[in-house]
Length: 420
Ligand code: G6P
Image (cartoon, rainbow, N blue to C red; front, side, top):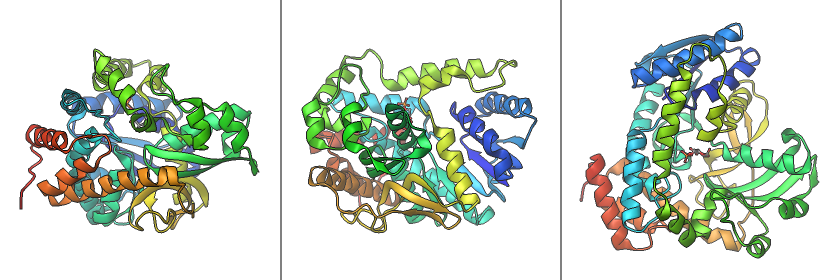
């Protein structure tokens, strides 16, 4: 078995490597190919992965390459975790939004739009490599904005793909901790889109414990001291993921972001520099503790168990990003949604989740429309489709602002949008 990691110079890679080492034997994993376009980062991160594998008796071979085709050729699984434009592009895009008085947010906000427009063309090139050199491979996409990227891949990539995020695992773990159960005993009924999701029901060993756990589990906050009003949470009757605060608390979140001396991108850039320095220590042979500050916790569990169930035809339940196909009848069949799926060698089959509650239905349809338009804009490079996408986004608040940030994104990143 061969796994290729595209964008392996990511500081997340040791997290993934840890998971691959746990499951190497069970998967029959023989080769892990690490590919990146940044030779220096590949050297540093690859070096640590080599030492991690050696410390565990080298259950598989680790190869480091700059050439993408070499990494992909004959792979069974290709994991994509790229960041086109690096943190620099994220920082710039966030500032462009803040200057207009808009929340940027690089996954679920307008900065995610810019990131999607830069990233989708590259992901579609990777898909072309899969079709040519690894036609049976599964593409596991972790690249953000994960839902939008996966929708582009499934609609236009011509490959088998599943989109992955660590948030569902994070919520499952938090629910398990709150009731003293093991995470594998917890099942979440979960609806929505990537970084735009709600837990509807929490089952623990087959018992519905939603009411009791919703009282215990505060809605996750991304900013200390800023959380949803408890009465709203009771009215909601669902457990929202933390990214919803950008929508539910739009004014407060914007105020907070504007008051910060540095953007999240600046903080992450510094964290990554520290991590890359730590990774260079030849004595380091495991994932360092500091990686937790970067985010991405549970990435290894989510990725490796998904791969295991696809590869070994296990029939496990995973909350992943797939084509809707009726799981949420309020959304188009081909729209990518994040819902519980049954995973076996045939793929990830979404489970029927039924109609959406009226208080989240409109929001999800609204954001899905923005996502659909974003995919179309990235593929067609049509300026007006791009403008409609951004103007449709619930966080842009003014179509004139949407137009101005679009023009800046286009100019700064040479998006090459065309007016037909
Ligand atoms: C969470 C999200 C990821 C995100 C990560 C880091 O794990 O699920 O999608 O990339 O946090 O976010 P950050 O803002 O720190 O780069």
